[in-house]
Length: 161
Image (cartoon, rainbow, N blue to C red; front, side, top):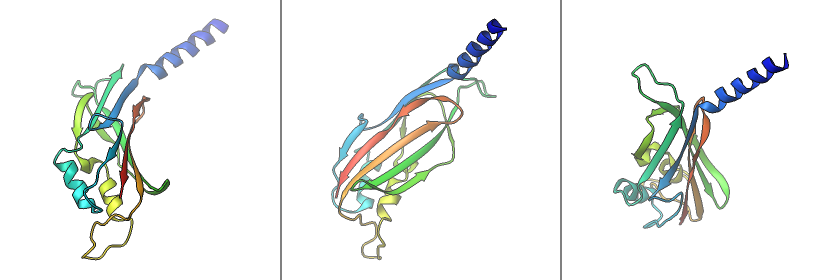
């Protein structure tokens, strides 16, 4: 009985750890980066990302991931964006799961919602649209695999306005 229990234990442990993903999100090839804003307008920060001044790269590998119906490896991730101002969380968004193939890929800035969070921290008028209040910001970009073990190293962006 002990042998059966031990075998069952090892089988469960092997099954749980067999499907594993590992990877990282980087901005301009760094997991931590200080962003230099032209001014306090979120729209200009958005333009810097769109013009590839700060490319966002997501990469991951997988182990023992089952193939989908198209005979390809696909992993779903929940992408989370957290914005802190002077150490206090001012906004968090979480996207519905999105499927990705393993490998390296560039992500558009719209994948993460920090531009929207930054531009809506304060109420703005038509004249001050997209203004970001003065402060020290930390932006955390995360990807968590759905129904898989493993970890994707988050990217941290630091912005001073």
